[in-house]
Amino acid sequence: MRPVQRNFYEPSSAPGKGVVWEWENDSGLWTPYDMEICVSIQNAYEKQHPWLDLTSLGFCYLIDFNSMSQTNKQSQRKRRLRRRMDLAYPLIMGSIPKSQSWPVGASSGQPCSCQQCILVNSTRAASNAILASQRRKLYGGAAGTLKVVRQSSTFGGTSLWSPTAVASSANNNNIGVGGGQAKAEQVQLPLSSANFSRSSVTPSLSSTHGHHVITINGQNNLNRPGTQRTSMGSTRGAVPPGVPALPVKNLTSSGPVHPALAGMTGILMCAAGLPVCLTRAPKPILHPPVINKSDLKPVQGINGMRRKTKKKHLRRGKNPEDVVRRFTEKIKVVPDEDCTICMERLVMSSGYEGVLQYKGIKPELVGKLGKCGHMYHLLCLVAMYNNGNKQDGSLQCPTCKTIYGEKTGTQPPGKMEYHVIPHCLPGYNDSKTIRIVYDIPAGIQTNEHPNPGKKFSARGFPRHCYLPDNDKGRKVLKLLITAWDRRLIFTIGTSSTTGESDTVVWNEIHHKTEFGSNLTGHGYPDPNYLNNVLTELSAQGIGEDNLKD
Image 1 (cartoon, rainbow, N blue to C red):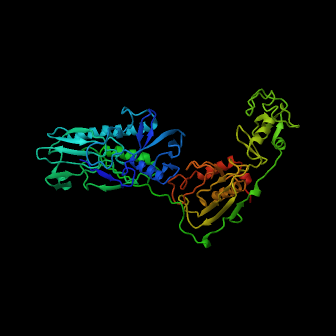
Image 2: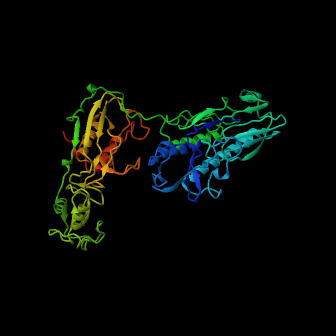
Image 3: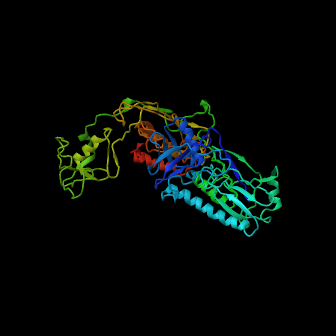
């Protein structure tokens, strides 16, 4: 025997209202989400949210209610989405209609070969095989029969198996297990007194009107948020002989484990008879304890504690011809190779001949960039400079991305503050902490932004970021200040987290926004972070030569 649990949902939730959300697989069949995900999607739908990010539930999908689609945030693949209102819940007895069993659709054949179906189907098949093997060992070779109703639907909340067992015998004793709103599949299993010892059965028996009901806890006892769970029995069943007891107390204590991996691990271990206890993921520690203003100190070696950017800081109006000539030198002997801008041979005229005309630059002239040595038509470099949304006097090699001049960005006006706080970051117990606070208000986009004249939003501000207060941390801060002055920290675009467009987003320079944890990858300890951010700053044209004493 094994213990089981039942999942109870509020009448106002998706299952209570008979609502199920489904996605379309590669075979054109509709597959329901797990009930917990259905509940989350329905809650967002009822609150009229335009979208829902499933990352917090362990899935890299974005649900768009306007287009009724599911988008994979890694591959950008979209699938159709639909909402059904005919789910039979609560189910007191019997089986649900065949159309509500997994997979749902006109055909009940095998799922398609997409990654999402393969993941669900392979996990289910492995669990089924292990269960069958353990049943044969535990119940084999005995008189009597045990009739088990096995759940093959994903509607049973987070549990993969929620059996409903009814035993028929001469004494008219019923052994029932609750929680089965699923397709009924009856399996005949031998039953004898040898398989159910008095010590293991008696404590969980309750007699009602001559019928004995035994409650067996479920095989997928996962502590996941969003559902209310009531235990139907307090005693654990006997683990089959030869199976080691391997409790998993907390999969996130020794290292970051993806929630989906933790869930599949729990399912397979439970199916094998191993006791599993998966705890809820701890919440990230985003901010330090409350700090008095008197405890905020300036950073050593850096003047002031605040920087501002305004519209007047935008550099304008550099002559394209002068910029190109400043960073190139003419080539007399032209090699027989392609210009990677116009894709014409360098020995031929530029592909922009007739499109652009400059008195001092002829279409056949070729120049070599000073640092990297890559060669292009001078007219092509002028065209590339003109096509950029910023003519700030800088030039970037289209082949190797080497920056010539001082590159500036399109960051909206805002404020940057930095100071030392009397707390330590994980992994830097001997140093205090530098806290950076960015604050950018919402506003109107200008000509340098994607949609001039349209409003842009600024979500999550002020944003707090952290560095260790040591030599390397202070070096990074000085370079970040330079990047802020050049308007390179933020830009206006589409958020990769929420999918919102015309909003302020990070601009390829990563920051640590978790103070006391690293649950999302944006915190400490991270021994490689300072080196990585120096590399990212260098890619923006900000290196050690920009450090000011």
